[in-house]
Image 1 (spheres, one colour):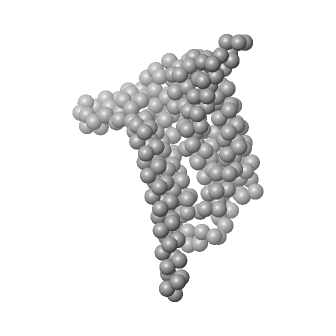
Image 2 (cartoon, rainbow, N blue to C red):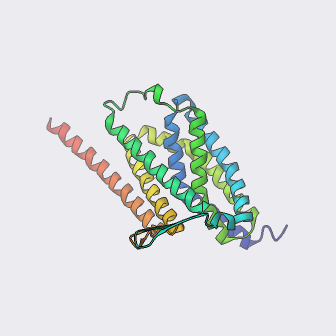
Image 3 (cartoon, rainbow, N blue to C red):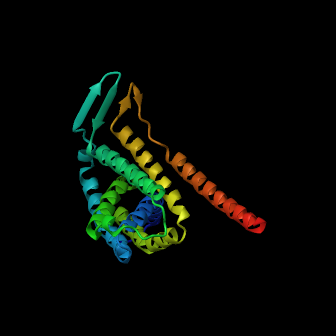
Length: 261
């Protein structure tokens, strides 16, 4: 028991919780945006159900990966056209690539929708709303995609299952505490929805680059290289700063127009 609460284990747990929180930001954003696809009265329930079910599955996935990580990394398909195209797929790379494609598709679809509607104040067409089951299913599925990197990163830091599981549970509880605030912020500040969607778009590119590296994907002898996490967070920071400055400048211009009018 004393060994469980040793300083080394507690520091590792704190590091893993921080890692899960940082890597879970994009997941939190996706859940907040995805929940808007259902009727308003069901959105909070969808977010909570999605996170709770995904949390349970994440612990199961953690257990599966610690026991059979070699099977997820073992190639099951390979195609080589020398000088043109090469790919070697395993389950890990397939899941990451599929997740990247879906996130890019979902972000682009929402951006196109926002540009095509005439009145953003009009309620969404109820015939196009998703069911609670459908939305929760997508949230859980994408949570699995986001879980792979965070779990594999955790496994690189420790081989103790209870530390990794505890970190996953704590991060899930933090998501439950924060998700409604994130969703309410996006609802009250509609202009930040565009920022959120473009962040998701970049997340999709990040996943595609990671999946391409895992699958040893190359075109015309040019291998796909993963986007560095430092580059990813730098791009996100620049997007946020530009959006904030642009918003403040737009308000300044509006005030000047009112005074001039």
